[in-house]
Image 1 (cartoon, one colour):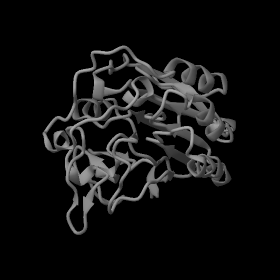
Image 2: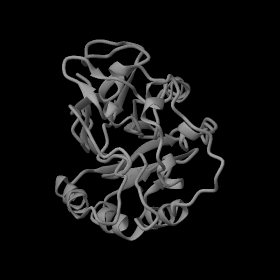
Image 3: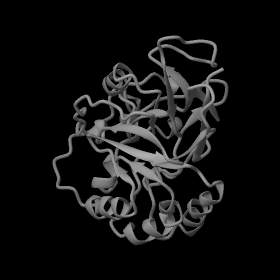
Length: 272
């Protein structure tokens, strides 16, 4: 996937987007697949959250991420980094807003995960800004904690360092309020997950639901926000938006249909 946003003459920036692993300890094949992504040799790894699906998943998750932690990286958390999954009536997902109130205490090791990723040099973007160097060039990032459970507080404006080659917005869930804030912040592209690409899709129709307030047509893949941007020649005034279909599912709904799991290598390249 190629996104033309860099200044003409700039070297490409290759970003590996990993999201929604929903890992349980026994998922050996998924763990090895995540480890194998290091062979892509990205310039930057962005993890958009929902890593866990079990309270005992921290050790196998860190084993899965270990080869990727050798690269520059950044992350935000999703609700399933704080709260273990629970059974929900599937009919709720047909409602405009399928969220349920979180009245219990977080029971997943989000703090330990954040400390491990931060210790490896990854930028914690939960309601924060940061700068990551890629081949000696600054990439600025702004992120929010998970809007799906109302933990998002958009960071105050800050001046980008001189020589910045790429400005990225990062969120777990692509809620309209956050996309609008990032668009107004003049980022070059927004990276999000959460939707599972609809998870259960119909051929020739697509996703039935998005599990947030974004429209169905932007439930996965590369689009523009707020206007469509089908290619590098269209969509002036719009911001590139990539929504990952993610790599996992809740253990209470372990089925995908017409929506394959994924991680995405995005090549940010120079505008023509």
